[in-house]
Length: 111
Image 1 (cartoon, rainbow, N blue to C red):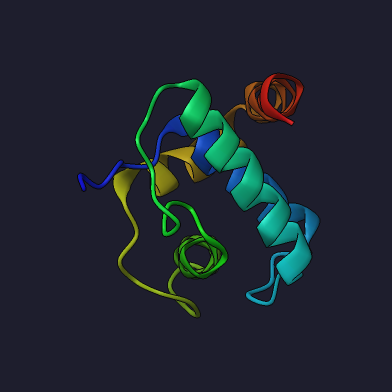
Image 2: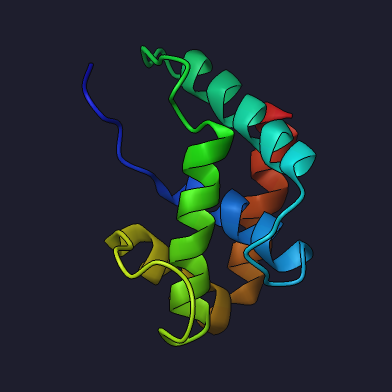
């Protein structure tokens, strides 16, 4: 199965959860599970073929660690982040209104 790269909406939603959870590596598993379910629902609505590994809690936790690395300036977390996560952090800092609009639209569409 082909790996589906993270896109802007997904990355913004995960950043939003990260920030709302206090910018920590230990995000509540139930909240991660909830986001995982929304991301899977979104994928199916887009016609993507996904398996049980797609945006699962383990994968989300790993991506949170890459986000944490970016936000802490490389002090903690996982180094190997994809470009989209660096771009979304820049968006968050440079245009918080747009960031929040994307979050709001994401949950209106897919929750």
